[in-house]
Image (cartoon, rainbow over all chains, first blue to last red; front, side):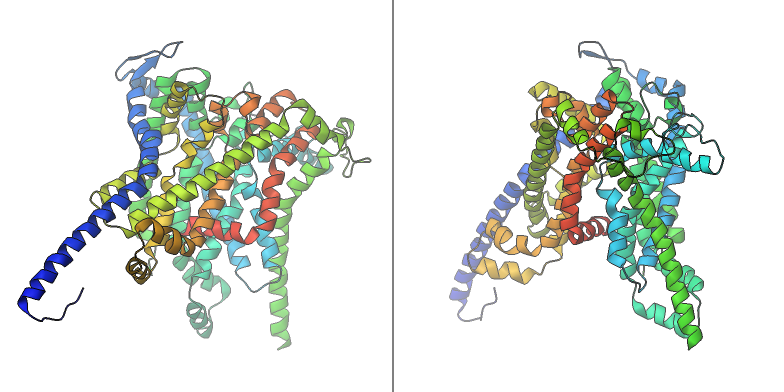
Length: 315
Length: 277
């Protein structure tokens, strides 16, 4: 839009033209922008944003047998505070998180660091570790349930070779949750490994070269270079895993039967939400559970954000 | 020098040792799934376990198809996955282009609204979404799963990142040639955002194929069931007949397995992209 200053009349005439041109261009910009975001924004509004508001509203209601509901104020929230089953579900979910997230991250970092070395067969390993990631949780649950089978399962057979009587992996209330945790860790390693691997590849080689010149051993290099430089990725993965773990449902739903003796000690918050919303037709209370879940996830994310300053290194 | 070689070889030996144990742990359950699916029921409950079945019982697979409309499940899952993925790729990239490359009033606030969806756990939407489906009369239909799945805040956010990284000059050149925004998006920007599109495509495909809760809530009739839900109902019917259950499970994961074998690189890079940004 640069112009050579000639005669003043020409210049001002040109300016008018340019500015009106800019105006039509802007108008056409707006037109296209709104047109292009319209489908997604409308869809998000109808199916996601407005439902958030509606869910809040539902959480103050009680539902009858025929889908009618009435306003009951804070009743559902009062019930939340006194619900022993919910408290148990909260505990179960917390145990699930405390084990799956750190162990899962730890193991996937190890695998990623090993695969980042100069060794043969890297891509084959990577493919094999990734297999559980592409497998539907329903099928994963099925095959593990079979491995865990108390009478004919592989695990108890192997234990019997060592003359140990294997436990009831998925129906003993004291063990079932840990059996599920093991499956969750197993199925998540590949996913996190891939993200860590791409994080490791982003660490400049010169750091390692400098460490080598200084004569640092592999353990020192890992703790002084790899871990700090990987910490932003670890932070990201830990937040995502935490949020994901909070919403665990598929594995529990598939592995623990509706009448299992271990249901009480394994059901998660989301499992309870599902029960109240779609099995017991207690939709108002389910909506309150969903609000609670949202609150807890927001609080935990906020805590993580604050804590990250202590251990995450950016550059 | 000898010593150094020894050290290197022993270190790589250790690495391989650890990696092979891990890889075995990853693969053996799948192997066991396939082997069990080819056994007779009697073989499956023998102690000590039969490793390789005497005669491969291909009939187990036939039985799965006979007991449940498994072909129908597969067809439903394919349709849902393809349409959701294609729809998201188009709609998200369209919105992402506008958010990344055009200045317009309300851009920031609208984008922030979209981001809100990302922060909220899925269960918060579920009940109202279900009520919408009831009102529309969409229960037990494929569109109940497809339509809400066409819109994605995550996809919009991911692709916006890609479009923001592209140089401005490209756009200016196209504008001087008289292209409008849709033409710039379609002819210039979309081809350049290919890595992002592949990543989102893989992510959505995996998600739609494997999802359990929503399809289970809205589609409980066999006519409109997906494979995940089909597996859970198979389990309900054949509590302990593991050869049948394993055959069903293997059938349910086979299409995704084949896709993965052909597109390994795209799968792994795609997941790295969706996780890394």
